[in-house]
Length: 427
Image 1 (cartoon, rainbow, N blue to C red):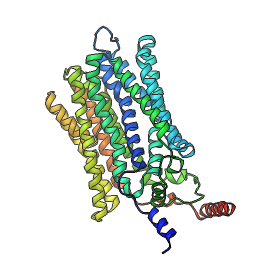
Image 2 (tube, rainbow, N blue to C red; image 1 turned 60 degrees about the horizontal axis):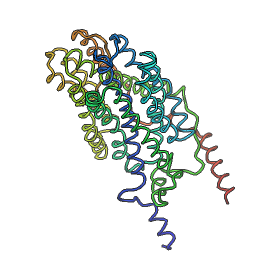
Image 3 (spheres, helix red, strand yellow; image 1 turned 90 degrees about the horizontal axis):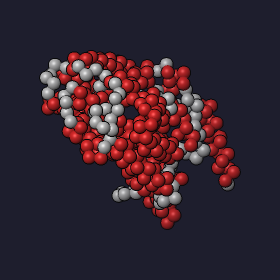
Image 4 (cartoon, helix red, strand yellow; image 1 turned 135 degrees about the vertical axis):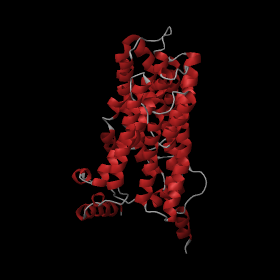
C-alpha cells in the first residue's frame, strides 16, 4: 500500500475523542435549551403578572388562556415552509433567526405589557411562535449534516435533551427570579442569554462541515464518509400525493399530534394549576412545576440508549420497538392523568402523578377553569387523545422505508448525469 493510500485510509477512519462536530452539538444543545426557555417562560410569568401585586395586571382567566395559547398560533404556520427553507438556505441561518428573534422579542415583552396591554403581549408571542417554526426544521437539517451515523444516537439524544432541560430550568428558575427581581426579569434574563448565544453561533456555527473554516480535513472526511455524501447530489421533488395517502405516514402524523396535545397542554398550564387549584406560592410553584420535565430530561437518555441497544441486538424489529416505546409514552401518561382525577387535591400526590405523566413523555393542561372538577375534563380529554392516537399508530404505523421515499429511475439518472457533468468540467 502506498503512502498516499495509507493517508487516505487514515482520513476516512472514525476519529476518537472530541472534534468540532461536538462543538456544534453543544451549540445546538444550548440553542434548543434557550428556545424552550423562551417558549415556556410565559407559563410561569403569567402567574406573577396576575397575582394582584403592585406591578400586576387585572387579566381574566380567559385572557390569560389567550396569551398562553397565542404562541402556538404562529408556531403552526412555518413548520413545512421551514423545512423547505432549511434545505435551501442551510440550518444555520434559520436557527440564528429563530433564537435571535425570540431573544429580542422576549426583552420587549415587559414593555409591551405595560404600554400595549395583553393584546401586544399576544402579538409578541405570535412572533416568537412564528420564528420558532424554524426551530426543528433547522435542527433536523443541521444534525443531518454534522452528525455521523455512528454517533446519531448519542449526539442526537444530547441535542434533543436540551428541550427537556430548558423547560425544567426555566420553570424552576422563573419562580425564583420573579420572587426576588420581579416578573419582567424572567424575560430580560433569558432574552439576554439568547442574544449572547446568537452572537457566538454566528461566528462559530456552520450549516455543514464543508462551510466551516474551523473543522479539520480529517474530521470533515470522516463525517462525509459516514453520511455517504455524493458529488452532485440535488434536492429531489417531494412526493406530496404519495406522502399524504400513506397510512404509515398519516398514523405517524396523528400520533405526533396526539402527543403534542397532551405535552403542550401540561407544559402551558401546570404553573396555573399549581397556583389556582393547589395554592402553591410562586417560588415553590416553579420548582414543583419543573420536576416533571426534569424527570423527562433524565429519562430521555436511558430510553434512547435502551431502544438503540434492543435494535442493535436484533431482539425486536424496528417497527415493534417503536410501537412499544410509543405505547409507554402515550398509554402510560393517559392512565396516569385519569388516575390524577381520582386522587385528592394534595400537592405531594399531584406532583408525583404529574412527574409520572411527563416523565413518561406526556402533556400539559390547557384549561382555564379553576374548579378542580373542571380541570378533570382537560385531563380526560388529553387521555382520550393519547389513547386514540396511539391505537391508530399501533394499527397502521411502520418503521419500514416506504416506496415513495425513493426517487424513481429517471430522477436517479438525471442526478447521476449532472454529477458526471460536474466531474468532467473539473477534469
